[in-house]
Image 1 (cartoon, one colour):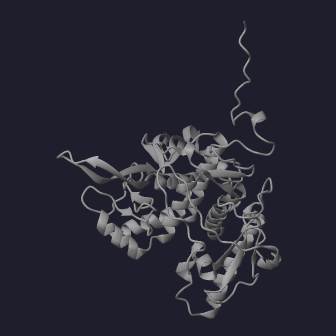
Image 2 (tube, one colour):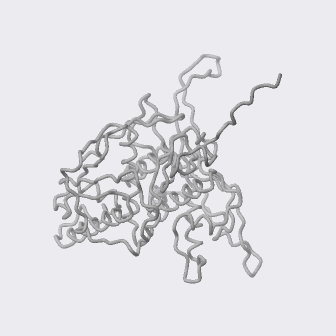
Image 3 (cartoon, rainbow, N blue to C red):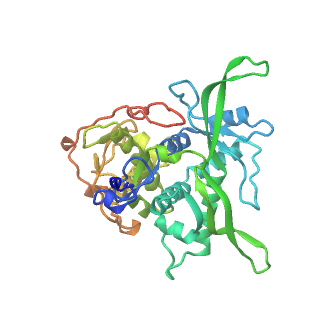
Length: 410
């Protein structure tokens, strides 16, 4: 008797197995078309740790961790639900192959973390993850640097190719990411040398980007030019079981912003998108809105160093106007739906409402040169939106971080 024919097993990578308009995804949750995913716990901690570290906290962390043979470790302020430290950053001090980073003082360590949270590096992170989503792999197996940069929306020169300076700057971003890793502490029990079972801590390390090998060009004198990677072999967050983690979605239109010209808008868009998806993960009713102080928005946009100590009224006005342009750029690329009031308040403690976009995104956003930066063109009625600010529980197979606050504290 012939055995019954079983229905074929369908995978999420089969075109007929996914609904129309939904792209392939590396994650257990669906990443809608027009978006790309980043491992959620990494995205959350990458944003939070970079925001929380100050020159003072960097000096304290450096003094506590820079003993012989141990690189500086920058820890978060909060604690996890079980009491262990949340995700932390460790500077390896590797540098470029031919130019290792000397880390001898807290100031040097802090200057490196400033690079980590710069618009160029944040865009590099978004670029690598979008490229991974497009290729359906967390690994890069001889991927050309040009192809990675195209996935990030970098504009080539008039010849249609990227210049050596453009490729050199992006290669520097890759080296910066390679020089950092995340570690996670978990409470565990193990036996000591006498055989007694004790409370201990298991520490696991995950590189932000592992460069296993790379293809470089040769200079005319025959030496290696390691300032530009031609082909990349490596992996994002190697050894972390990424397939079990939720993907935090980000709009691909965010990549149309230029890190130099639109750097503050890019930083703000990354942070707003992270918070918006945290709210959606908590199953809050649509539409969503964030309600933050002007001071917090200025900090998120990377403009805090210019603002708090300024007394000149004209300078404060210019910074608020620049922030309004940042928000208008995010409206233009579909990262947010709008903001209220249109004329930002003068007091840093006054609140601004940011309206989350709908789940439907445009197929392609405008280029940064086409973005309209007049905040007066953005008109949203606050009566149309219900402001909600829930608590979010992040799920991770490695760590259970604190619930993010309902809104960042003033």
